[in-house]
Image 1 (cartoon, rainbow, N blue to C red):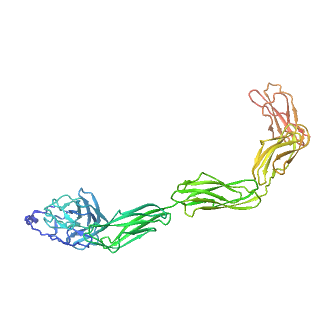
Image 2 (cartoon, one colour; image 1 turned 180 degrees about the vertical axis):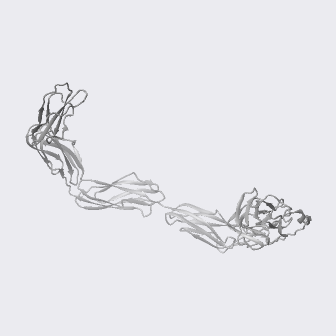
Image 3 (cartoon, helix red, strand yellow; image 1 turned 90 degrees about the vertical axis):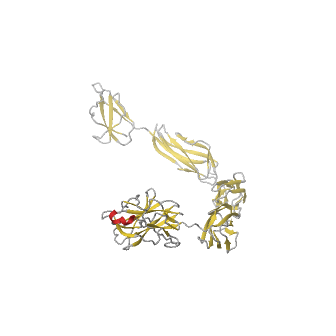
Length: 578
């Protein structure tokens, strides 16, 4: 900033500025400022009623940390809105904040909503606009490095000015415009652990594993460890007796042991209490207790009633529900009539894997029976015992037919009527059907190939057709030969053949050339009529076979020319079927 020569001619003289540095932090023990409580040499300076500036200072920090606030020294005539900025050395805006609750003059400070992280030995620029035309400065204030603890100014082309709200790049006589930050240095932990966390891995339940945790005193004086407290099931720590004095720069080892009492993930920690700058050092611990687990589906097997001399088989599924491999070494079955088959043992199941066994019940007597399946494994509480139960019952071989008889009624001779019969095994043992034999004229069987085996409750269906060729009543039966105790099962059959009914029509042929005739039929005098012929009748007669006894039908005929044009209906004739 270049002031008016007439006003500032006396400033050409060099000033010797003596800067005092405080050895203590400016705000609290955890924060620092560059200019502390210094005050400017000139206040209420102005370069004209229309000249406003963005004033700033370049600074660095010897350590990494956070900028928590921006501050500036305000002249008594300076009014208006002030906005603080922090930029990197290339002019990229990193953070900005508007000042509020300002006093009439002196140091003003505004906290950032979120602290700005800054790196060590890196140039940053802090700026605040002038608000109006007035400002403060100390000439040659940055000609020499200003240093306070970790913060220092940058020598050369510092402080800086430029248009309000923009990154300033100009400098005049190394002026200090009293723009500053509040800095919180990153504090290194006095006591650290290596590693920072411990993964103790997978350990079988009942076994133990130990790892070493090394504590280092990074402070410049002795650290006293007052307590070492582990948390988490199955986690213990040994190696030192507290209180323990750890000399600066020295290390001590702790032994962390994991002895999982059960299956599953254990998350815990070791909390080291001391008088270090971090008085409570927490080291996260993690381990997994490994163990196979066995489960059975179903948990018990009930065969229910089973006929003597017959076998019933059910599936027993063994699953590894743990997180370690399950070894099945043997299976043992006990109880009269029970048996088991399955894969060759020993067998190993990975977590989540299953293995199926077939358990069989073959009762020799009609009585209730219990038993067990024992599965020996490397899981806890081996062997796994699964209860078995079943009841031997007297063998029942029974076959039923539905319907138990077939009545066809009247069937026109020359036609056929077909009915279905379902055979059901209603006993408790398998039945073999060996032969189906029809008796009686005009009856026949189809739809089932012999022999057929039916398990209890199982069904089989066949068809019986009645196709009379003469008139009159007919009876017969179907004989079902099987291994059932009610063999042969007889199914009565009955039906009657009736003579076919027909109506024969004749008419006088057309005198004009025609392709043929269509015949129409109705059930009431005068129609309506329905065409009965699917194709043209070439002659002058037609026999209607689709009539029923006791009904009267009404007929008309129409001729059809070669071009497909049909004539009007003929006169109506009627026929009553006896």
